[in-house]
Image 1 (cartoon, one colour):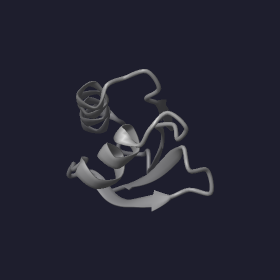
Image 2 (image 1 turned 90 degrees about the vertical axis):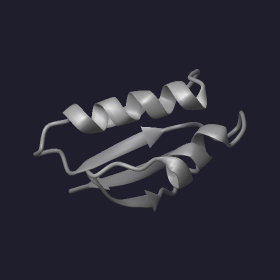
Image 3 (image 1 turned 120 degrees about the vertical axis):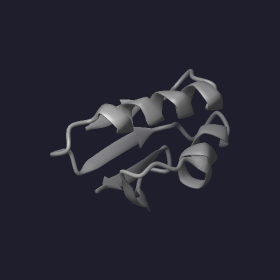
Length: 73
């Protein structure tokens, strides 16, 4: 599954991700978060450093610096 956060503020993006993680199907084991790279690092840092949720098993860097892979429990 993939979610695109382009154009969102960090608080809005965090809220959207938390809601998605709470209602995402238990069979989904990976979420690819597209946060962008060229227009600053606020969203990237929020996803990689601040986002916490019981479903998150691990956060993995991608070969694409504009996205982060989240492994789900």
